[in-house]
Length: 337
Length: 69
Ligand SMILES: [Fe+2]
Ligand SMILES: [Fe+2]
Image (cartoon, rainbow over all chains, first blue to last red):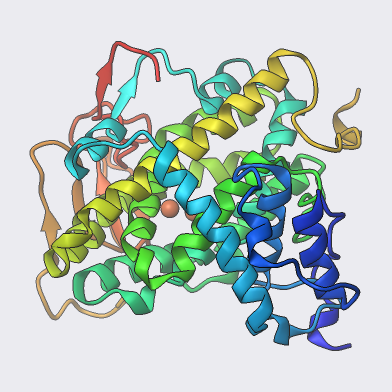
């Protein structure tokens, strides 16, 4: 079996753009002209899936899709058009802080009455909602820290050393059984989900695809290295308290030991990662390239903007009593007593 | 490296607001004589005494705001 025969199957398309990318990857159709991307909804299912398919070629690819498509010039040209649409929308729509210090300060306070997804799940989340949350988030967590590894060759000195140290921890500190993506796969098993890479791509909402696409966009462009660093800082700074609430939710619902452990580990790990990212990675980067401060700020603000869109989507669906996924999950057999 | 005699001073980073950062691995002896250990490349030790995972920092030192977020 060739290695490219492994990997997830291509998901069904969600419109003409994603359909055309999938068609190109299967060799069944031509690519649209780049101008076709210009009128598309930048946050919609079709554009986000099209972009996701393009980016996934740089990670594990898809079953039956040849690895040479990663550097297919036509596909790269089309991806660039999708990226322009997405990035220009983000730059226009993201409520921006005036300075990096302000953006960081906003992340470093804890609201007493938080209204985010982890506050909801921690206080009143039911098992079916935790399962849906994990299924959506699996798009990132099953390749946790991979998008951020792209930035390593674009950093130097303190920023590189700090970033590599945090990534080393994300990848298990030298031990395969502690790789965070693997810890998340064990969480999925506890929750009665399938932990196969790419399994819930088709079920995930556009808002979730956009969160992962943002990391790939920032990671794959040297020009956006400052934004990648800002994005990573946002994730690490907000993770510890959020993980605390999710660990509580897993305990309260009896989700299982691996489900608790994933979030317990992130409470402690990210309390450290946050410090290293702020002092070493951001501090080191700006000591070398102070002109990137605005990009770091943009990375933080764009991440908050897309995470907020995802949160509103999930909470609206759940409060209305219905599934947040495009295709509902099969029942969790071991918890249906 | 673990299990080798230290050939240089271990660095500890202090901050007025926030945890002590110590190069790992570390073993921490608690008041009751028990020890806990961590082999992370760096560990954050709680100094505000509010951590629910004492002696490890859990970011409980952060300032609370009234508003919702
Ligand atoms: Fe992690
Ligand atoms: Fe982390």
